[in-house]
Image (cartoon, rainbow, N blue to C red; front, side):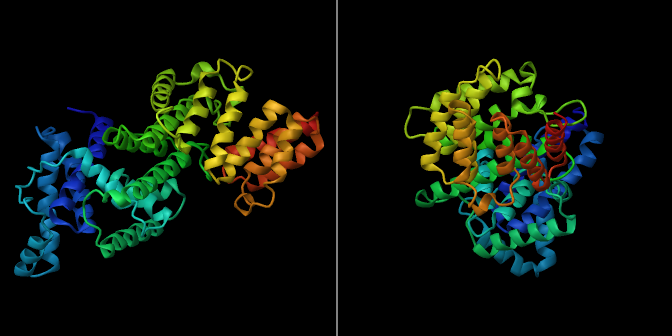
Length: 413
């Protein structure tokens, strides 16, 4: 009998497979998602008492199918329901509940593509992905993004209605649209991981459950598309970045910058896996942004100390990344690399070109980097002002405390 944590993990892994089976067979994404959630609730109540069935996925599909039938019957008369369900079913898909033969991972990937449909805003894509594919409850998603549960419920409901209105078929996108849709899937997973690794607001530096969920979903995509360089690059980037998580906070949750982290606490297994993944795809063809970011992360992770970091190699990789990315954060990180190789004044000169970029106008990272480079350049008064400016923009409490501490140290010095 699995313990509570193991049971929750099993149900979370099975949730997208069950939902995929129902949508593939019956359609009606929103009703199928409700039925799947009710089946999961039933399993959480019954399995600890009666034991996990021999085919947990089949059990869940059976229960969810019955609940979906009840939901449809409540919406329309019996004859009309039967006619509608007959139109929804795919050719050859008249299977007994629990006997679905479609590949589990394929259905999960199709769900990811569906949740990242172009008709949805990025915020809705993230919420629907975490709900339908990640298996997170609406309350959990609302807490993660610091919005009221009622607001998140409305957002997810609107997203499901937009999916329904778009009439997108439950299948992998055609070849001519797959690349663009895959890019949206990877971007959503990247955003989920980013919010989990470095929370934009709230009392904690990181939300480990979001980062872990992004890695889990990235593994699914990689398992289905192992030959895609950017899929591999994104998974490698997540692993190499998350490997540092144990050393990023001190005993009281305070932020510890990379240069001061105890590298013995970094996750060696994740570093090894991430390095192997990115080493296996680099050189096969033109490297995309996720591959280049993963390569940069690998250089950091393989350095035995901050002083031993190969900054010239990192700078060269950022130069390549700048050519293919218009992201101002990339330009910001490039300025840091320039400073580490050519000196802080050279880095500060690079920052000047970013001052007018409106995308960074309310981002604490720009004054934060300026403060760091000014401190390196021996200008403590200007650095202190920049640290305080960064703290005023930071939405995350540990980041605010770190920036204020840096400013106070300079004032005391």
